[in-house]
Length: 360
Image (cartoon, rainbow, N blue to C red; front, side, top):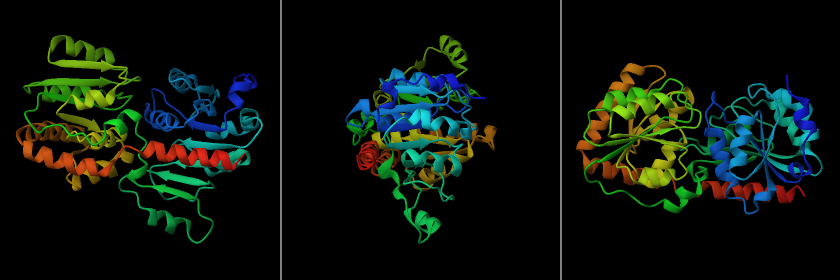
């Protein structure tokens, strides 16, 4: 049951913003949803216009750490209908522009939210007709014609479809266009998402530990296996564990090859031109890892969630192949760099600002 006291204590400052971002980040779902929304918020010209709504303190704390006002609703992030009775109190006076990013969304919640302003939904897979004012799907494999067919001849939401809208942090837009030299591989980056409850990073390390280079591992904010990684690094001097990374673009640029789970990290590497081996560990990542593999933008090692042993074997093999083929790394890097220009967050921020202005 939600904690009504959380909402009853909303301050005037939390009501004043006219752009509300509804997203969560926690140990179960990782930090991806919240991070991509923070990237959009960072491009809004007046930070004080923005407030984050999160189901619990876990996500709200992260948003506050980045300098934003954030409200913890005291609800279960998997049951967004719990929030409907709280919306009037949380929204306060004046219409707002809402950006919603959750896998647990439903049409009833979105319809209720529209009573308080314009609603923009960030989703990964088309297939539903949502009662919203705008739909965002930045995936490289997403096609605007699919959305037009789904929504038919009725009232269309505004569509923001394709990699022009990938919401990367500013550090990536500032670094986009750079490309590493395809010389020897001296540093390999391993990144497996904010949660990694299965310690996939550790399993990858055990596979590639004998390669002759430094291995830099990112341990995300919700990684329960951070202690294991630290222990492993203490007995393997060439392994470096990175926590609370603020300059991910700099860390990526300092590496010659990356091993990454599917998701936003793939687009970040593409924007920088860093060659990579990728894999999926959830069904919603399969399409992207397959797309970049088929387009020769990176190496696809397969679907860890369906075939963990085979995927680890392929990661091991592909890392060694990539290290041995500098020309192929260079060509893949060039193809990947064309996919993402790093300005998607700015484009989406401008759309939210325009919606907020129209609702005044």
